Image (cartoon, rainbow over all chains, first blue to last red; front, side, top):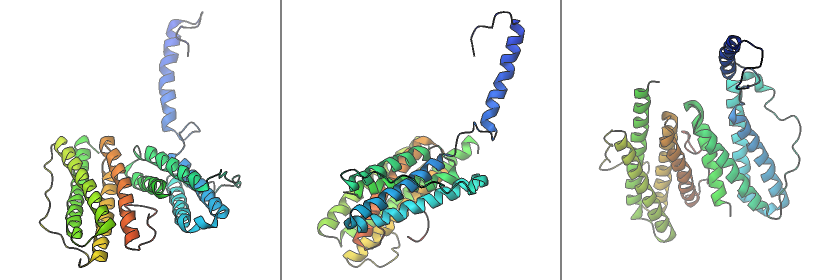
Length: 158
Length: 152
């Protein structure tokens, strides 16, 4: 919105328009329209699913990693399921959309699959930790546990 | 929730975290008598972590104007501690209890100055707990939901 009134428009009308515009704009944040920020748990659930794919690919590339990494696959799959369930609890309309419809492209492992997995755990732990602090009481426990789990894997996977 | 209720909830959560830190320190002092070698070194290091945590919680309570709960003279152990294995098992239980208290504090306090360090304590505790879970042969070393109150 321009700071100067448009030429030719009576000043009072501009003021009225400006006053009316304020509640209309703030109203958006309360509504259920498309402007509403997406549930932060959706991105965390997507990250959990991406990690499952990545870690499975790492095990396929190097079977020797299976013993070390299978518990991580199980943990990230459990995270995805729990986060999805929490997203759907607050927005039942998402029940059908929760499952990804298109298969993700195969993850890139680089030259050191274990290092790639470790980086992914670090990033997922940091993202969950950042999201956790602002969450309401009934959601922070789940997301904090996800953060603690991922960050600890990032430390132990050497 | 009013500001006073929120403060009360934070204090209650901190007192519970402090009580489990007191208990953990008691467990580490008991276990020390049975541990040798790398396990004893790990226990020493972990006990120092708990000392730091206990001090941090006591300072936070003092900042909030609440008198900190005291340690009990002794605690009941879930299993008799008679050797290195049962000592490590006690430390696994102590760490698991502490994780539950830190997660509970996160759920009870909305103060970011409490939530951030509580999340850090939950994360650092998950690593300590994982080491004792490995020592005691309790897979998975890292549970998917550290601090969730359920048999792990």
